[in-house]
Picture 1 (cartoon, helix red, strand yellow):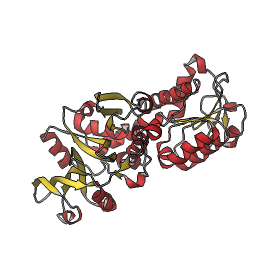
Picture 2: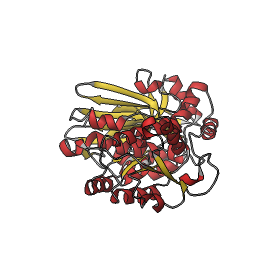
Picture 3: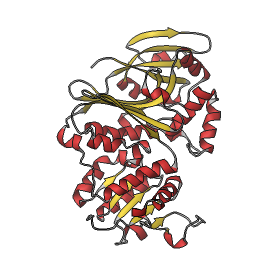
Picture 4: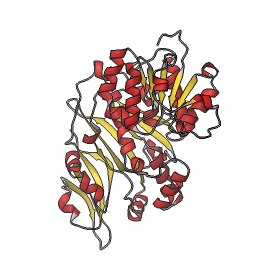
Length: 400
């Protein structure tokens, strides 16, 4: 899209984020009335002129006057079809669909090159936090060591209610759903899938590696119990759902999404409610901390708006880490220290600890803390998901 062309937007989806984007754009003089068509699935009163709304994707994708597609729908399969066709038709695209992007990263990068267009997706990673742009522009060097953070606002809201307000997990989950932070089926958030897809995206912009989400361990908070909460409190910890990608020796990286026992001296300890927090660590600059809202229509809409305005300046991701500092490989055999709470001791036949740091046994709840390889946890993850246990990382790992 040439810089002299005025942005004319075809918007897919008018849910919480779509409405939030419409609201923030209406307050932006440079983009007032930039949204010319909105594609939705059904007719209903939305408080806007009916002539804005259309019901078939091609009504937007085939419109030659629309030069920018903004995709804000939930269904990853439908989003993929829309984004692919838009790129093939030479339209720039802004998307917030982290699952679609993480699962199709290689093809989407190639489509941008083939059609000389730009796909931006800042809102897919951490809501209002501009972490992708920073990784692309400010940290565009070979000094990065790790990216660690709370990447999901819904699960963080629930855990904040549990630890800061002594709420029951189920009660806190219900409130998160009532407030629109969690879906009716909350598994995407609380079981770590949302954080996983975001971590896959951040890994590409951090180390230039495209990794299949199916090959990365994610384990969530849905099995947390009063015993786990009491243990964490007594030790001075909070439990947070954390995603991490870390650089190891010999250009290896490792990544995972797990609940974590977080001590007060860590930046993410104080990240509460629906906020996200990301710690970027490097060789020369030590640690940088980014903080902002990770859920809600207006915060996410503001990130989408940032991508739209970037397109006005012909911005596109250069994927610098892959182009100039590539060659990293995904190492699955790194061993991390975990807290395992269990009731049935038979689970110990399944989980192979390399080294035990601490153990406690009782007639009701027991736990072990020790080092386990990520590859082993990956090999038994289906059994982990179906067992009456809870896992959390301690933040320690064996050196590699």
